[in-house]
Amino acid sequence: MNSLMRKFKRVYKNSTKASYKSKTIPDLSSLFTQSELQKSTMKNGARSSNESYVWSPCTNNESYASSSSAGRDLNDPSSISPSLSAPNTNKAKLNKYIEICKDKANKHGFSLQTEIHQVLASKGIILLKKEQFCLELVRYIDAESLLNNIQSETINRDVKVDTKVYLELATLLRDISDRTDRRVLKSELNRLYEKATKEDGMIIEMFVNLVTKLPNFQRLSPVGEMELTVNFLDPILSHVFLCPDSSKHLVWLNRKDDNTTVCRPDATMVALPQKAENVTLGYVEVKPLDVQSNPELAFIDLVRLGTFARSLMLRKSNRKVLVIQCVGYTMVFYLVSEHSDGITQMVEILTIDVPKEITEIGGLLQKIDDLKRLFLLYDHQLEPRYINVRALEDDPTLTVETINPKRRKKRIPSFSLV
Image (tube, helix red, strand yellow):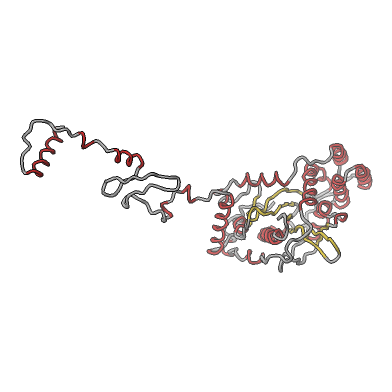
């Protein structure tokens, strides 16, 4: 208080040109008491640059104005809170991820074997494969939850092969060996087929075909693409996707169709409503095990499948297409569908290891429920009609051009196709 008194006398003398003679200590409390206007202004946090206060009522659509020295430029993106500028919906987050991948494709391209997710994303295709998610993608969304949600919406887990049929199959295939009489085994399977439903009968027919074609042992010499297709893959795929009663066929052709521009998929799943009309339902690409000498070919197959499927999907009202990648004795099934406008999702729904010899047939029993579910998905959800007369032009060769040859050999592949 003494220091304040001395300061008061000095100010008084400067102002009046006379000394303050009174011994009475002036009441200085008013200097430290805020007016009602000041209290209201401080409460609402708005102060002018000359330390006087300006207050106005604030409504839901108005904000408080701060001084020019303390205020922020709302047009400056750096002044906006991250929580406001960050995308807050899955669509916005996926669009952000896609834009990053497109920018990367334009700048320096990709290493196909380590950045396959981003190669596809640069074309608006989000690849979701269990336990193999793009690290850039998981910064934006919970990829695993998205994968699980799509699988649960697509695959009906309540669908199972009849318990009696399953147990009889297990009994017949349990002790199978290279000395098994195949003719007797096929007769017993055919008797079981007579008692089964249509869907369960499809599973039994598959085993009959495998018993007919599988060798007694796996040979050491490499199996080529044609032999792999005819003797190992087709005995399974043909019974799931070849349904003449429904005019649906699996066609091994290696030729162009309306949706693949200049490229030739190894097989197509087609519906034939009438003699002069065919509607594609999905695609198959096959590479034998000796592709390991040039593994990039199998990665290119996956890019081709994604691009083919996106073009085809846009011609279907429910936006669903099935594609299959076969690498050696492993088949991976993907459902390609529309996430939202401009964004396509390519989701792994099933992986199957094909038996290499007759003694391995029993191992396929654990997948027969999944195969029955896949058959029902194919039969009920893949539409045998187009809504667009022509496919959109989306050349897969242009996607492959985003691959940078200089980046190919730098790292070990970080993505497993099977």
